[in-house]
Length: 228
Image (cartoon, rainbow, N blue to C red; front, side):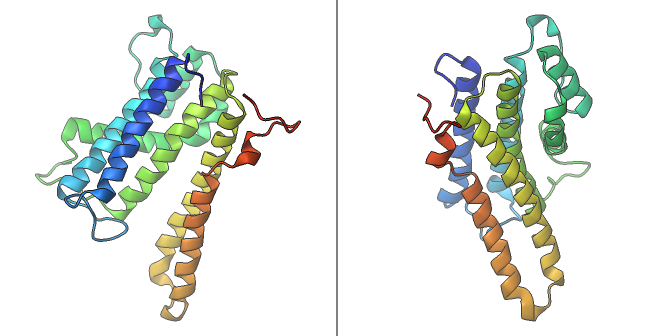
C-alpha cells in the first residue's frame, strides 16, 4: 500500500509475501499437510511453523530498524520496555501501539525459545506444536501488520487504505479472541448443543475472513473520491 519509493513498505510487504508463501506451503505439500484443521503438528510441519515465527519476528524488527536513527546503538525487540524505548527513539507516541504489545511479546518469547534453544526447552524433544500455538501464530500474523500500519499512521505516512487495513486487522484480532474463547468452551458444551456451537464457531471464522477483505467502500475518502 506504500509508494514504490518507500523502502520500508517494499521490504515489509516483500517479507510478508514470503511468509504467506510458507503458510500456503503447509496446505499444499503432501509432506506438510495436517490431518486436522488445527494441530497438533510434528516433524517437518512443526519446524516450518517455527520458521514462520522466526521470520515473522524478523519482519517485525524490520519495521523498527528501518526507522531508528543510526546512532540508536543496540536495541532489542522482546519486551514492552524494548518497544517503548524504540518507539521513543523513532519519535512517536507509544500509547496507540500498546494494545498490540501482548501478542508481540508472546511472539518475541517464542522466537527466542526457537532460535536459542531449538524449541527444546529442557528436554530432548521440541515443545509440542498444539492448537494453542496455531491460534497464537494466527494472532501474530495479524498483530505484525497492524503494528506496521499503526507506525505509518503515527508517522503521518498512511493513506486511506492503510488506515482501513489497520482498523480491519484490529477488529479481526478482537474476533480471533472470541474464536479462541469459543474453542476453549466447546468441550463443556452439552452434546445436544454442539452443532449450534460449531455453527457459531464457523460464523466467527467467516466474520474474521470478511473483516480482512477490503472492498470499494474502503477506498473512499469522506468526500467520496477514490485516491490515486
